[in-house]
Image (cartoon, rainbow, N blue to C red; front, side, top):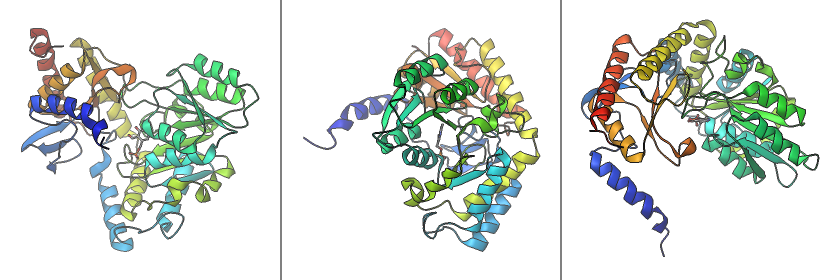
Length: 402
Ligand SMILES: Cc1ncc(COP(=O)(O)O)c(C=O)c1O
């Protein structure tokens, strides 16, 4: 009996699928970045249509200059956690900037979005008194936060207010604290949540609402404040979590709230206290990107234009899409095998998208997840549409079989 026996099944499946393709969809290396939407991979220029670079700001001039300046002034790393020696003026300033942008009174910066969810949930909820209710399709870091808390966790059906209402009603008054967790836009299918209804239901039952806007920050709402802004309830959410790794084009995460007790997390949240803080360069570039989002809506406008173009083109090609227009456009394939071959076909046609298969996907679907960027040029999108047109033809001819 070995520790490694459990990997056998996955390893065999992985090896058989990957060796058939001659390249590994989960181990690709970007040999050289040419900009936000192009890279050299395997010696060829590839259009990147599987990133989370929604606003295309990884090469934004102000952000690059801010990062350079921060390295020169504050060094390459903080060598400590927020709780110890790792809080610099930049971390505090960014907390205030995020709070001001979102209209919340309090904000805490974490080292990643993963740790923001992990740290908020595990510190807020504790067994045996408290219970967490979680949308079934929530991201792994929300699940991991529940696990780290040790509290009872109840799943409700994805994007289903009635399912949440029923589960909260069943709990009655026997539970002390209740936290309901859900996301703004879901990263795999690009569908958005009924956040207004979820918040109303949570509050009706005396529960707190935690909304993760990782993929929707900068993208949804008149000012880019997320799905909660788009649905008119921006500051009614109890805990708003986000990441710097998508629209803010950096690394880090945050939790914002109007509850003054949020500050207690600084001495009770293990993922805040026991890991190094984000580097000065990460903080400075996130701050510059935030200033750009706050002052310039043109990237958001461009992103939505690009998303509408791709969604319409794929609909016309007859692909089964997973959601209405959003910056994530996922094509459903018949099974894992077909998804691997289709993904490879797109790579051969100079387009990189994400291959996503169970158990990482909702409803055990196999998908090609394309994400649109504001930085995609009309020429980039032509390459994408041409590759998908060839793919549709190839599937119709039976060359890419289910
Ligand atoms: C919904 C959601 N929340 C949180 C995270 C974690 O963000 P980070 O990359 O900053 O750890 C992700 C990352 O993909 C995500 O999709």
